[in-house]
Length: 448
Image 1 (tube, helix red, strand yellow):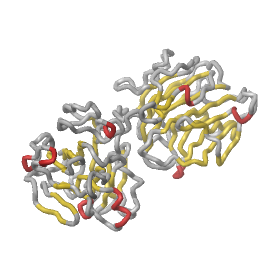
Image 2 (cartoon, one colour):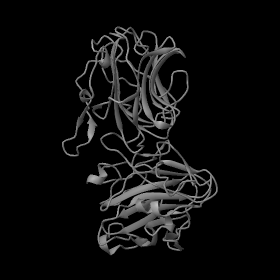
Image 3 (cartoon, one colour):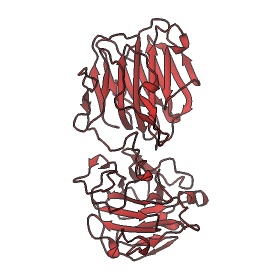
Image 4 (spheres, one colour):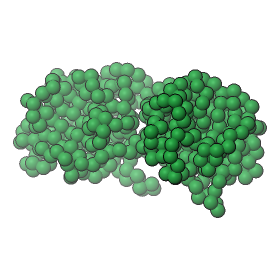
């Protein structure tokens, strides 16, 4: 969301001493970020937020300059590749003091807290009070906006629910996923935000408690039941000191200075056929786009391109290719600012192909040629078979070497693909046609 938030003024509640908030969240970066808040003033507010660089979850009802209920987890939520299901319950009329405020994460109730203060019996909440503005995605005094994604946000006025009322374990994958139509009662101020394209603030609970959207909402294909690959800001082991600034849900990177920087992504596989696109946003053509074995970064340090690694493979602006410190002329093309480089990697047959925009595949490549590998840039290294986990990776040199990847979520940064190409797998949305037999790096794509 980053520069976007939603707001609505609340009416007379069913019961502002009892409510449940449930949402799925995939965040980017660290620092204090508000998921939801209701703010009267600095001394009276309710908030659900990620707290400082630790990314602990903090659920606070702050009244008359003191905690009238606060749970701050000891657990750190630091995985930018994951969707977290977060449920917060306020129930001050509960006879059991320890049940008056609750946090559930991915179906499990949290019990370990750095701060653990429960509301007194019958205490009121700032959130869900008449005339108070509830906001999703920022603190209500315009600070600490959420840098991330939200899905399936429910608010139930007058009800205390558990996580299992909103989520369930998928019988096939074993992953905790949303219930698309949970059997819950919303009450007067309740709402259900699906963040649908063109109707991001529309309430689907039946209450018509629609929210006003401030900013431009990006409606990604990324979701809790089909989680897409992103670039990985946590992958700093060998790249420490050669940092990128990550933005737009970790799909866009800009180097912080003039030396080579590299980053890998959050998903890969040892077999299968995958496709992704990278748009050249900056004017500097000093960049590489390709794949690599992420385990190699622990053995090499310093300023490196992906093409300097034994199992790192990339394509650059003039169509040159590189691997293991060797960079040679290959395809004849000119890839410049605003062009899109398309990568098709056939891990099953150890081949990688590239093209610019919707042009022909370089060197008359044919990603459907299987083991023949017609026009492939490389035969990927393997250890006696398909047992190396290859992931998308990029390198860039300067602050003008900005890159934005589309792994199938349908956007380059905050710009939607202009006209989606064909994709037989129906997993992900790309600018151009996906080669037959290829799919996206996503949870569904990895399981085809």
